Image (cartoon, rainbow, N blue to C red; front, side):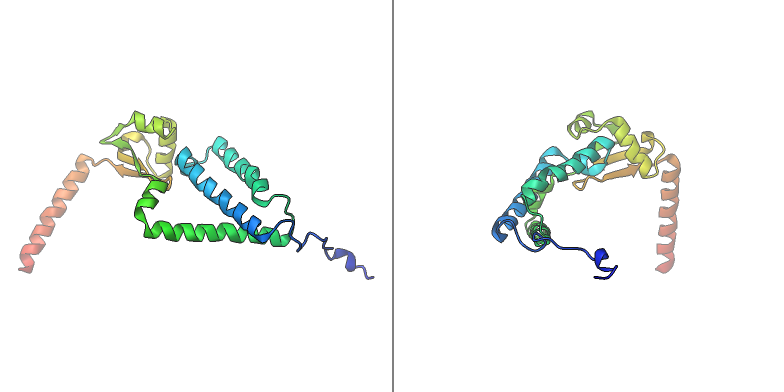
Length: 191
């Protein structure tokens, strides 16, 4: 025995030996995947939109909570690889099915929710998405707005991202009118 032998890992009997059948491992993984997709759909876009410390804690503990249901008492390398393969496979199938069936995709993803229109905040929509004015302001800041008064329209997309439309100012209208006049002159010259 050399001094380097102690540096090599020793593999126990659980390294490759499964503690449960392959079918059970795959069914458990796919069932947890479907459960989490549906649960995140039910509980809203907020978990995807922005992670405040509370949401981050929920998502981190959620993964730990479903771990045992996903892998059972499985500790083998092969079992972990099978579980990961089942999750990736379920996601692969789900993405392709939803791509082909738009109605199912809309049902599962939901619809964008209009939070602001013409500079006015829709309080009911904000409440339904569990978003405060501070949440909306923080999202606007991340997209380069200094204040909510600069925003005409805002929606939260099905992905959880915020879409903002800047209010047009009198200066914007003047520039647009000047561009229209220039385009008209150029069109006359081409004729």
